[in-house]
Image (cartoon, rainbow, N blue to C red; front, side):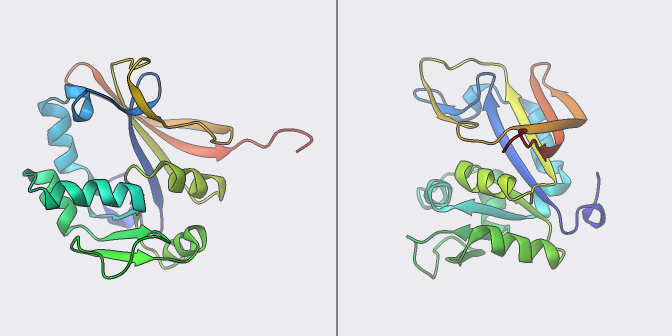
Length: 195
């Protein structure tokens, strides 16, 4: 899985999560303060960096807010340069964050059309959007970076609540900094008998 040619017209859902399935935790810094040099270097090198990023309004407000507040770092600068498609019925065009396009129509149909045109796509955050795309059978890869922390008392944004049953075929694993696990899967929706 290297290079754009193998990923054209494909969609990757990309999550970071605690061991117990939370996207963040109150009182904890980003990445739970456990990011290390290997993980940060991988973020800068991954081929999916060039993919168009899909996000919902909540994620857009959060991420663009970091840029407005003057947060520094290569990640924020990179996100400003990367093409982004924002699905929302509450935001208004033009969006203030550079390289952001607002789509107010049905996200599933818009993503289906983008994939048919050969656009390489990935999500960032956007739990409800990712769930809708997975339910529609549009997700080609489901990647989770698992941080070694349990945030049962302070965790926010349980990632998988409301998700359908999904089978996951493991196609890649990697360990960063001796503690962070990357798990890359091909997902398939599981249909229950009688449904």
